[in-house]
Image (cartoon, rainbow, N blue to C red; front, side):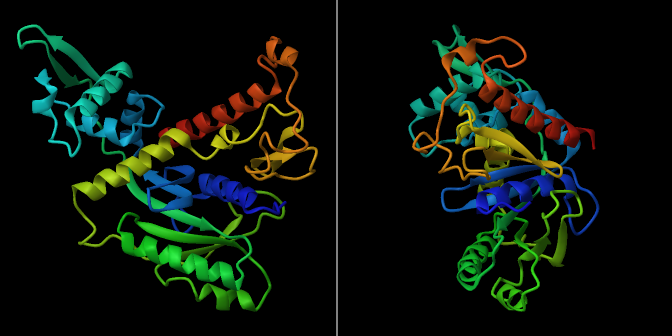
Length: 331
């Protein structure tokens, strides 16, 4: 089954990447995120190849994302108690915001914090554990099931940015395999540095659903180095770690009577019983003319649907995300 909308195709590519990464080499431990990026660029799929031992130590900080403000504090916190303004680098914004971030980090148990009576009530910090080097490589995938001329032109510009930005290790294009003679010509519009994988999801998702048509180039260069690049890469990896790709329940209405999860091979997609297909995130909203919220009585029932079927779907997706994360740790 191939959904009509690009949104459904995006979910299928994410699941395939989770099952079969790397497509051009040996199986590699990785976590997969969807619709994450930076202020200037958002990617359909981001694959973070990880060091399993480093990821295991990263999990000691919890399952939530460590944002940019907290990341600087966690990485720079000293081994022994020290005034936070001496311990941390000079920020490019007021120290009062740093102090607020210190409190947030301490509330989450990422660092230790105390008020020193001997130093005039200064706030002192120390690390609870060292932040590990858990990210090996970061790869982006742009998903375009129907690669027509206008889509190829638009993707060419986006992939050129990825090649030049120096943030990624690789960039790929995923598109549906066809028998059309135009497909190879359209693929020639894509930058030569970008890899191309042809997918076939007609019978569902499995590790063999993708075939490499063009190998990507390594985008790391001597010019693309430095502490700012490393920080930006870690921020991106943290977003993937915290959100994953099954977070579509946060932007859809699993509490609608018509919301279902449909199996397609080894993947599960959202399905709307009213529309008879996989809806887009924009369609599955409170403005949908077919939306039918669960009755309040459903949400007060006990096991096995405690909180209503919508809450059960949400818990199921969260368990699948955690199970994929644990599987990466075991590799």
